[in-house]
Image (cartoon, rainbow, N blue to C red; front, side, top):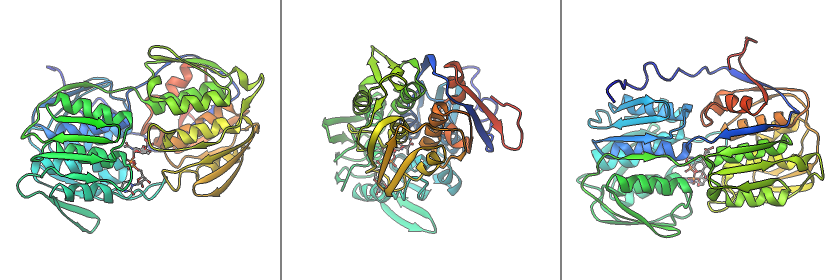
Length: 448
Ligand code: EPZ
């Protein structure tokens, strides 16, 4: 700790916004890749650290742009964030000087809204920007706001900001969600850990990242547990303490690399990979004919069927955990372009998450987007290089997968979307033998 310095000065470079990937496809991947910590767990833990004035230490935090934005946002609130070594973040929220989360933070990252619950519960007030929609859907926050109101908060919405106060303490309550929301569940959990009395959340999201957040909160002294698969109960405490927690591995990054091994026709090993969190996805891969075998914390991927008997078309439908993750729909759709026959894709979580497929079509995929929730993919179509544009994080990673499977060179603009959620993605692909470069727009010199 002695040599730890404030987070944002020298350790993490400011992101270079205007970059593109150039990928020459058609080469089977081989070797092994280490899976990083889960973005969607780490971001919530950084927010949870504001529930206490004591220092929290998180390890296995992915070095990604979203983490940098969350750390920066906390710093601007007066919270001390340090990064003593790569992948380790320490947060000390002794003084939260400003209970104000500005539009800039919300515009960069929706997860900034995760500060609503903890700041309201600990400081009794917060002004926080509406994060709004993004390229995958409308993404309202009404469930978060209603959950806080049920806990006794008063919340007004003016000029794009929620003005929230909790006169006295928040009060434990029964919170009934109309449907499952991951961050809605998590925001309510964080607020309820410091509320007066007992809170029941139902139906609560069952994603592994939610359970990792529960484990972290328990170490901080919170009385919180999942009492039924869809129910979380919390007995509020007056204060929480500092804790140390290791973030679970990123199942979405793991799924992305599984598809990379498969569509390149390669053989790769994922290390530190959470097979137990990928049930529905691995089952889908099995039905499609991808060889996937799980070890203790490894996943072996064998894509040799691609050029032998071929992959098989399958119908998929996304769902809340333990169903097939919506975040793995785009990678899985790339795989289905390489499977023989017709596959139906049903996206049930977000209304705009099939839009990116028009870019995939430019690479030669045969995809009929029936409506905002349904697409039909006809395979196998040989993909070819093209000039494409990334609209969001998972679509970006999936265009990289398509480029690896394609013949020729693909240029993928908007690389910054991918850096929001994947640590060192081009480095990891280079180690697997991919021909990938990250270049500055308007400049052909390699920056990777
Ligand atoms: C989380 O978003 C993840 N983000 C998403 O990951 C993921 O796709 C999503 O869960 C579903 O698994 C983080 O954890 C930071 P929801 P979240 O609330 O919590 C609607 C990625 O690529 N809804 O479970 O925002 C909503 O519009 C990202 O890593 C409301 O109507 O998702 C959606 O249709 C993208 N009102 C559905 O619920 C609300 O107040 C489920 O969304 C909240 C949500």
